Length: 103
Image (cartoon, rainbow, N blue to C red; front, side, top):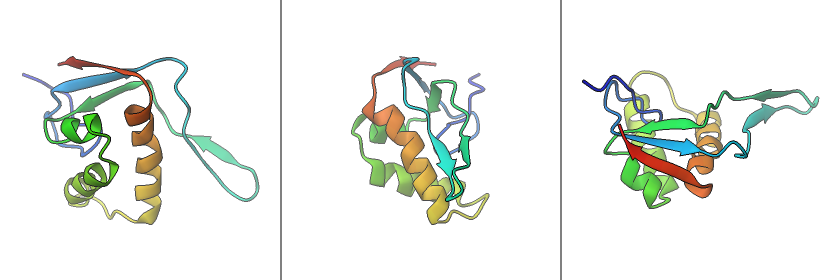
């Protein structure tokens, strides 16, 4: 039984694909006007379910964000801040070389 959750829409145990990014991938962080920066954790491994993977492969950010908001929004409020953060994180998977393997 597959035990990986989707790192995009958060569906429990639903991941069927693993995207592995190169070590030279960009790091995503949050900053403020005072110059403080917090990097988001990213081990370069992103699990995706059968609903998210086609959107990732097609570089359909709008479709992926809609799916994430629909599923993740059931367990936590999703605001503009979250959408901006998700966009930046997901762009690293969409825009940089990632090896895709079946899990």
